[in-house]
Image 1: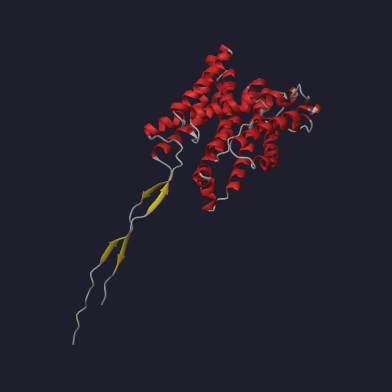
Image 2: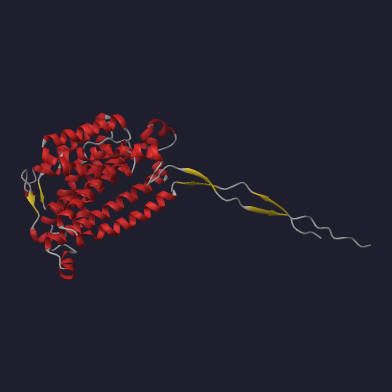
Length: 372
């Protein structure tokens, strides 16, 4: 007796669509490519631009590094510091100490200056983290003033009047000889070009590290601590550890930046290196004007600050009054800064850190088959 083979029909069903979390957008990807091109163009500036232009760009780069570090502290970790000049001064004096007292090459001394600033930040954090709100801000300022007074007693580095780097230190540092022999640069122009490239690398590393941090789970923890520390602790976020990590990291980068600034200046004094106006007040202005809590804000803010400084600096005290007036108007009508205003109206984000849930392609599931 023959039996007929039966065949079950092929059945297929669509699975539930996949979901993925993304922060990158098409605009941010395109901007990343433009930023790389801009970095290459900036790197070539010392080859064709006048020395004054290189020095102006160096000023913009270093102020932007300081602004990004203060922005990470205040805009993401909620640490309103008025004492960042402590790490600028520590980094600068460490550079002079390593070069003059130990004979190290200035390029190596710049990196070690950042390590020294980070070491100084550890006991500093022990005291300041016991304070909150305005008390934290005042505490950082007081400790910075203590640092200024201590370095003013360091007679081997000039005491209260300061000192200068030996001319041969900058003339013979790594890279200067190559630029002189192979590219025909003079010693001063070669030293400026080298410090400019170091500042450009420092800025690129700073923005890249901060952006990756903010896109990570640690970035989410920082935002939670900034918005509501008690709630963040209840959810398991180690607020003190997160703040300490950011504080030490920004001290390290700020110290390197301070060393670069005074490597280019080649002269230092306690009042200049620990100036609250130059290294904290101006930096806060840049961040507030541009937009606190965004990576794009300080970039816009430093451009505005540089233009205003060049146009209005000849007006004396009126220059400072106009800076203050602009900051007040911005805080009243654009609390998130100019970039925050632009972003809220256009939706443009060049460094997006917000998580977006996107629907991915569905997978085809095949079930069943021929059976005899």
